[in-house]
Length: 164
Image (tube, rainbow, N blue to C red; front, side, top):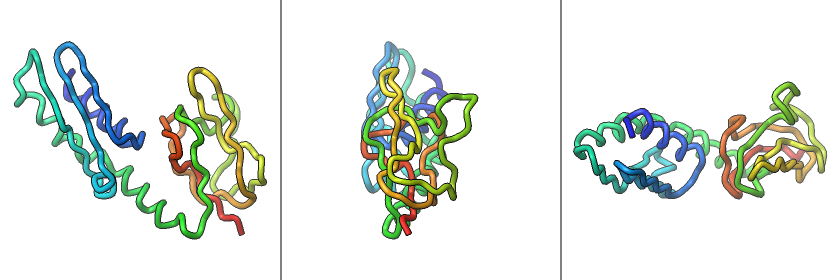
């Protein structure tokens, strides 16, 4: 596993919101843990790394180089500040978030779109099944918190809706 692959893994973990990810391959074992404090301060740590075929010093620069790749946590913190005045639509399942029904179709909603209860906001693919995620409230889409084609976790905020 090279440095770019480790950096990519760290970025993936930062975007997914997972609290712990372990990866074990023939030549390396990596465990990445995040804590509530570390996501708030945009920090992530590789807790355990055991290279089998390579010296440990060769793998450590990847962690330092990847640390700036977590500004996503700052966006999540800002979104949490806005949650007090807006309704948050959260993911009911784990899967991949898509803003449109198929690649050649327009997005379900944009920022500023008006939605009613039951309107489809996005789809989440889980195990090759596409699940429509419907609005729980009527209002206006204020913010879309997830990038298209990104992995999402259960209960992860997806949209901010102004119900007024």
